[in-house]
Image (cartoon, rainbow, N blue to C red; front, side, top):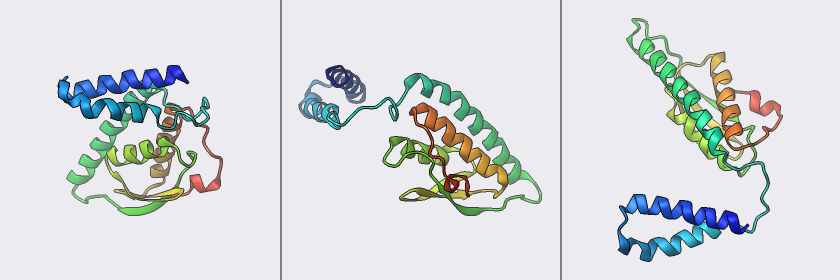
Length: 166
């Protein structure tokens, strides 16, 4: 637990230093804030599941960039196509990620960064997702993204039929 606390302090202090340009007077506010944030949730039981895995995040980046590129090409193709082949829809997507996990926030934000999709609202255990084109491939793409996010946070996905509906 001490190691986690010290690691958080060092990481947050480096981030604070970068964000403030090393301004010494900023530490009057930043120092106490770093200590509070580093201690936050420290007493909770730590498990191997649900923790961000930096090396897995590095593996997520190429996947995300490739999906963003192919999604952008698809959106551009649809916009330039003479028939404008879009079928927009708003669908409910049930989480398979565990409740209360930061992975859910990461997943919801990742959806919004992908071309052709947007997280519209968050309800307890599901998201409302706007799709540029309502196709069966949309569900597959969201499930693959959620699978990758689960790997980044070392989560096992909940096995429920709800997670397979869109």
